[in-house]
Length: 265
Image (cartoon, rainbow, N blue to C red; front, top):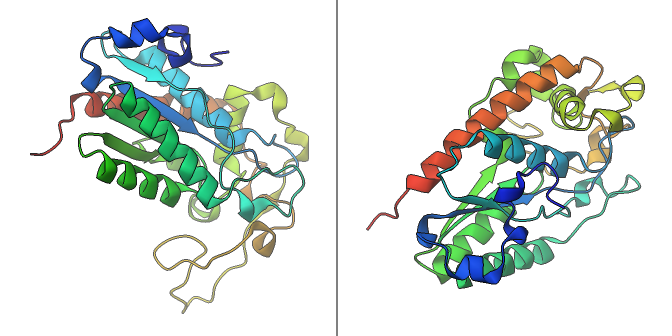
């Protein structure tokens, strides 16, 4: 049941008495991986975001010092994925349902005596939901520290391995996601079906972008027929292994920083 998570770090394997008697509970780090079940082109499975989150976290927890108390909750597989819902197989929660789920999970964690919760989100369509839920949890419980983090935002070498065009315009199911999936779940990748498809370009004089400082609201079918936004054909297992190592190293450092973090007074 623990998937890629080391079993000694898997929260559901604890008993209630383990949790009741756990020392230093206010500094124990609880991590909630949040993914999605959504289309990722013809070559990748629906589970990509959830698989990347738990794969990276599992690798990071294998590397983490054993004396740093960290536990992973079961992955929340469903997310807010309605930008992809024109493609069969995508399962989406509403913003309201996802927010309520995060709030109620957070409240349960807090009620058990924990004061540090990481929302480890791997789906690019919902960072804002994580941020708002985290703020609301901290407003409700002012000694509850909640960290709404995006899996890919820790220091890592991924962009160094991509072409300049892919680094700029690859947003979904392209080189990076396909490569890391070749490292995490290679048997589920159909590389022979990989395609290249980039979004339409804005005029050079335009300040707008599909993502960035001045974004346009879009759904996937507006900018992609295949569901891919990027170049999946250049993906390799070697790149995926390097990306997985690098991103998980970044998460080791992030977890250490969260463990020692103290609320400003």
